[in-house]
Length: 295
Ligand code: ADP
Image 1 (spheres, rainbow, N blue to C red):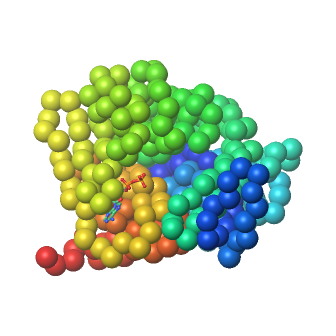
Image 2: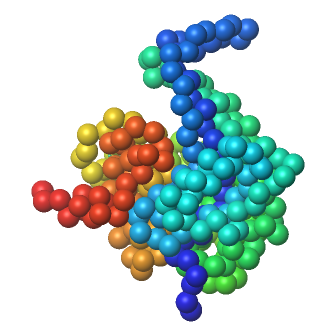
């Protein structure tokens, strides 16, 4: 089977609007901000950029409005050479936005307005989900759309990966369509634990453990644990997205689950060494350099 792409990501794209302030406002309160930036975000788009920079021929399928925010996101998608032929541009919807306040103490408060992301339908995703060797999805678009993508991919022999974020209770129908489920520690607890995910039908579960690394769990085999790579971490934003994109890219390149786990841990670690989400995502040469670093 020849695939048009290595990795297809079906998921969300947002413009993140980030204001920093001494302290976050309470209800009814106005505070002065000290700086303001806008950048591309959304788990779907972040993970597509991560996969592309990790060397995968990547296509991204999501939904945006017909507005300036969408044009900004399209520029990011083009910059990383990501195929956008299945991206929906919806004339009557607003591109998703995340309004993020960050205090001097590093706390944040976030309002996500899903907008066009909520309009991504089952028929938008079914064909593109069969175009790549690996499908990677999250839960920031409607769950019926996620199910349709997984189902089409599974029927076509595509390897399927679900990053269950934000965490929500998932049916065995969805989990049985997943070759790999990648939650973080918090998400796996909400989902009922690794054993429950495997019982409901996931073939493998990879739990990301932040600065403690990650582990791969399958039924009937010992867990494979990878320690975190020792790096100078400055900002853990998008570490999980980097991990998922790197994992998908390496699996598409033919690696084993354990091989993809190690590659993903390196990708996640590097993303913590730079500030922000998309700007922090590492390239293939950087990942290879960390993987082959002596000691
Ligand atoms: P999320 O961002 O979804 O909560 P994690 O915090 O678990 O995800 O991070 C994802 C992966 O990134 C981890 O499994 C690990 O491999 C890597 N990582 C995260 N934080 C660090 C860190 N401080 N040092 C090295 N690697 C890290």
